[in-house]
Length: 172
Image (cartoon, rainbow, N blue to C red; front, side, top):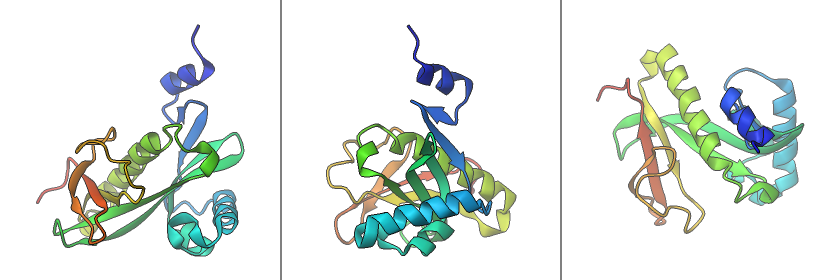
């Protein structure tokens, strides 16, 4: 028997295991902004990337909803990465505690990469090379290439793994 989630995943790539992933980068979606701010406020000081809810909501790129409940956020920031000498779209992901260990980060990261790839193509003057992230949860990186195609590129000063994935269209 095929599950509804499997059918949704096949027919609509924005659904994976019943969770909907939405590209909201620079779309001024007031519902998502409100939900992101509420989630950030609920998480308090240790919440999403230790940012204020307002700052977090400004940078939301991809969100994941289970029905009407916001369960994960991928925030993005474009900045120069001296390690690779390129502008990169930095990913900060946050998954609500009850939804961790369900594999939400993989499709969230893949959607973030695709969203930023499309943004990069529309804004070539920004010369964005790819996506990059710091893995802050110890023990999460078990191999040098992740399930989303991001590769280990080094370590932060605090010993946290740095991962990245170049855009195919980027020229060094």
